[in-house]
Length: 216
Image: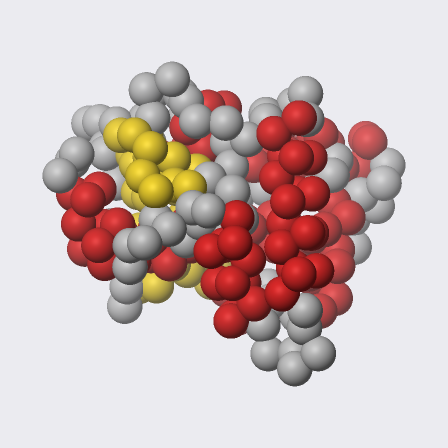
């Protein structure tokens, strides 16, 4: 059986997370948060006390890793060897470890395989930066969500609780990340040749989802 795989890529602040959640809810399928999968890897590295800086130890750990996701009450739950570890993967310690371990090529390769295995088991919406170009080049439908830099920066500004935040600094940092993401040699941020571009600058999340549904 072939399952429907929808990818949503785009730069930071374009609305990928909100839109992917809403689209998955509308379609009644799971939204796969790749970041949560990296956190799950970090959680298991910590739990199993894996010497992840050692290539052999890391390869052995990854060979036995069994991650999956399921939809429960319209929320993605991360399972490790069948056990729900979702409540444990967002601590500050796991966040730091996920950031460090995600840079290892072996971890990224393992997550690529896990994401593709998930796609063979259920309909899913995957959001990220290279879902349609690298992870799922044969996805059912690919979207690339964009928005004006100023709009994206303002959205991020509104999301941040810090009263000392500066809109100009946020916009400058976002522009720098855009440049870095698009210029990197490995999996650069760019729309797949067959991706459907949607500009969310003047659209609400429900309006973006409605536009997407016209292509499904």
